[in-house]
Length: 341
Image (spheres, rainbow, N blue to C red):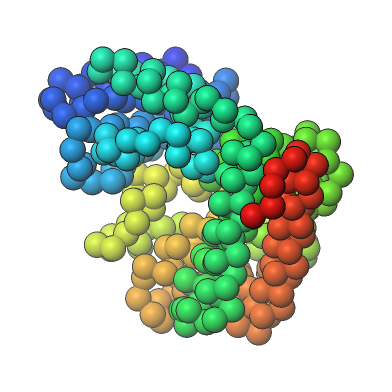
């Protein structure tokens, strides 16, 4: 099947029409994510990000629907009451930017979305609101660091995943000053360019430090990478059979990750490694102790200093990075006339 942006948009429209037809609870459906870009495919794969707002509590917060090996639907469900105070969405680091940046509305009851978007968009770019979104991300990173320092999890896989989650928050604290948070697959691919485009000399340096923490500085051979890919794919297959499998790792999304990482490896190895490590750690965390996937993850994690021996040193580096980001946000606040907290 030949996949184009038009193909993806047609699937999105058809899916929205079907959901409205079978449920009277649907208030609004909109499309967000990579399908709105000119190049939605990465490694020949894409997911179609739909948001469905309902007039009551949804049965599931998220569902993943396989269409074929290359395409899946990733549907987030919200209750209408989650948008009851649209002004608060101006400082929400995820929903706010998604609404402000004009997603493609596929269904809207009584202009509900128009009202919510207008209320959210008013003063959205005021410095205090921009800073609040960035600080929300930075606070998430600091909280993850604190929990890791307190030894909240003795599970190596969960520790590694929490470390990468902290890096995600940290990167998005930087990115939030100049636009929207970064997407999962393109996170390290876009972070250096996006932060450099702000014209602030300290931000590219911070992005470079984050990339080093996420992917290490050691050279990795193609044969090592292929061995990691094999272990990673086995872990994704195994977790897909578990009842506790997180929605993002369901079998329908396996190619979404593996083909993207394979496509990025030659020219953007750090971006490829980011995809592998995050999902590898999350998969291993939902697999039994002593399984092959967990042992393989430990081997790969030593490359970036996240094995048992070097984890504390990496945690110290993360602390220094977060200090720099917090100082940068304080400086941004002073420059833009935002009162201190």
